[in-house]
Image 1 (cartoon, rainbow, N blue to C red):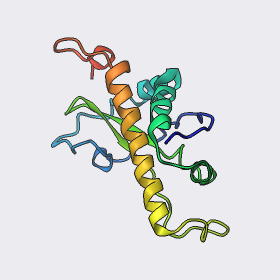
Image 2: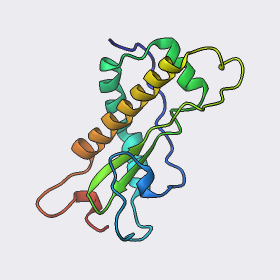
Image 3: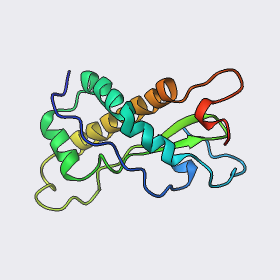
Image 4: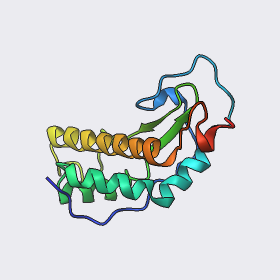
Length: 151
């Protein structure tokens, strides 16, 4: 129950979709504007949150090396996304799904049960990194949320 692979580069957090598209995020009744600090989350990922979360997940995952290689080949690592939820003051995430119609040579590589297991493990990676961001990178003291106190 450990995955021995190199830690990939963190996702880039390109354009944000709707907050309701993220796991662990409740769609706010009213948008607070486009001031969500995506650049700060991307910086936190680059500064070690991704590595710490990935390392923690890597020690507990049931994903096999060939499954992880499959995930990398499909570009699913960069498809992860993280969102600072201003309303709930937490970090949501969106884990990528394996495409339904896989092109050859991937179409017969894994059965549907294995694909579901891969997606569950990707979801767990997103949750782990989200927890690391909330716990170790977003400093909360009293009523203020450290870096994000202006948002």
